[in-house]
Image 1 (spheres, rainbow, N blue to C red):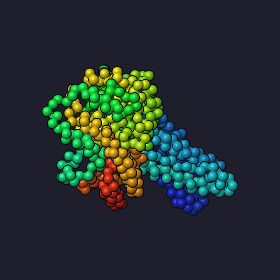
Image 2 (cartoon, one colour):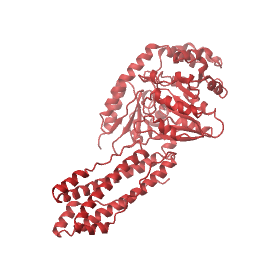
Image 3 (cartoon, rainbow, N blue to C red):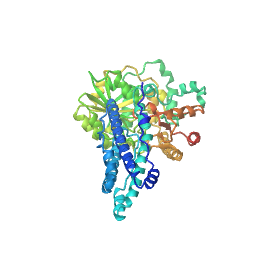
Image 4 (cartoon, rainbow, N blue to C red):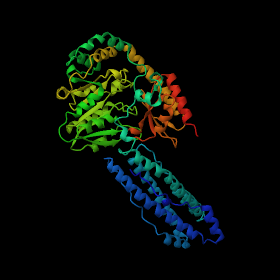
Length: 550
């Protein structure tokens, strides 16, 4: 695959004011003519090249299935020879300085808006050019200030060129990393957090020595009462599991609350079975809308049954912009996937935000799958859940599990909440005996362990705040706000990728989640799970060493 590149020979050369000004004095002003010519000619070449770059970005964005930002096109070309020759009349020189200043202002404002729309995960900041200040100085000094204006505008153009040289490789990298065909993105269906087994084999580290920050699982482990339930029920493994555990569904409904009944519950072998199950209810060709970054199994489940996927890029703060999701929906859309709290950022969306999208999709007969696997971690999770809204929205499908909050990934137990009509439809495609005989009672025991639940909420909140603060104090790292038991971290320092960092930490027995495999993120993001204060400190110290300037 050919990487998007830019010709280094196309770089605009800087114009050194001091050199030209001294030459102008020495030549009794003659050198002003080639100075102005050089300034205008470089301006023309730069804006023309920028227009070509925008066209490349637009083509790239279209291939991603997103609406491309509006291009500005090449700004009007200014005749370098004409303007250079006209400065002999003096007045045109000031007009040219004003026009060149306005050209750059317009160009930078557009460029910032354009790049922010194309790459919302990257921030591009334009310069501010105080044109009124330069013009006023020129008028007050009867034209002498024009030399200062000329000096400033040349330096600002130079700064813009130099900034562009730094930005273009970054744009090329973003275009490469967000391609689904890139080596990193190809691993998105086989790369998940919590693979301590593969990590142990790769680095030849005993399993008990691995410190796993990659899997977003409660570090406190399962409830002791859940473990006791498994031990007590061990003798039941000689029987088939109950194919229709009505009492279990009723207990789960009581735990969920919000008016949910047993008829609104369907069980699954972890949330994964439910994610795949919902796609099997669709007939014919369809597409799914997925705000990204997000859990890769949503995409995989859709592709598995022959569906297509439309990605909607979330902004830099990962907030759910429902209007953008609505714009991505087509006549063929059958389902929209939302993760709340969002993974991998930990952002919690309000109930009102989800309901706004639900109401829109209900009118179009589109299912909204809301994955609430992490909602028990969120202090305001009870206010944000939409589990109780299934009565009003028959197109709502809420997914939960005991994997994350209850620390039982090995038990493989999940459940979904939906209107009875949707549950009945899914029962026809559900695989028999997918729930093992030990999972049900272990889950109920965990649900009833109030001490474990309160301790988990209190401990995770406390350790998350300390962990995030410690990471933010490390130069070159930015931790995003989170309501869950994990933190998404962006590497802002140059010359270090998340993949490189993962490998370096791996040699020390520390496993982090490299987020380069997430569609919508690049190789400057990684995720870490909140663990004990001692474990977190060990990772923080290792990160501090890795981030030291070499």
